[in-house]
Length: 247
Ligand SMILES: NC(=O)c1ccc[n+]([C@@H]2O[C@H](COP(=O)([O-])OP(=O)(O)OC[C@H]3O[C@@H](n4cnc5c(N)ncnc54)[C@H](O)[C@@H]3O)[C@@H](O)[C@H]2O)c1
Image (cartoon, protein in one colour):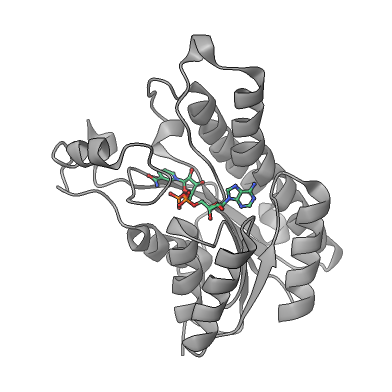
């Protein structure tokens, strides 16, 4: 018996990195998983991996910045897998930009992909839950960058601070309707989002836990937040950062 047996989860950005690890971990715990990504091929690969391990999965190509695409993703997941219980807003991007040189296009691309996406996907999922008089659980990928400042990252820091603010407002507004929302704030996790992997390694020595994070370190926490083991948690921000925030 897995702790997510009978549950259906949707993971955005599930084609690689943290999203893929979360999709595989939720499936290992028994959930049927809708693996969604803007990259259709990687989404299919994650779903195929789950099915090859004996799980249930459905792959979806969707752009989380586009309302019509998000609506089709959520409708498709519910049609393919029967319902939706768990939403993981993981899709995101990162690139450096000095504040004084940042273009409007760069600002909007970052905010749209990392923050407006969470508004769109969460709103459409919540509307479906309210219409069906049922609850659900939302897990949002925030970041330590939403809590502390980094140079050349004003657009990313603002977006990630906004992600946790959204989490808290959803938790407050819909708790009594059986909807929980929590954020995860990873530190530096070894994925392809990192612009300078060699430079990132240098940070590891400064951490109490002397290594960078792995996608699975985040996925294990996401699985806990997705399950009833976290039933009394809502509006929380869980740091998965090797102790980064201690300094
Ligand atoms: N890796 C880290 O150090 C770190 C730290 C803190 C927070 N995070 C957050 O964790 C999440 C996952 O990051 P990751 O490191 O796995 O990144 P990644 O680049 O490896 O994976 C991101 C995935 O999101 C998808 N994606 C991007 N834009 C999309 C869009 N418009 N629609 C749908 N899918 C889209 C990509 O195709 C990719 O598969 C992000 O929200 C990121 O900000 C990562």
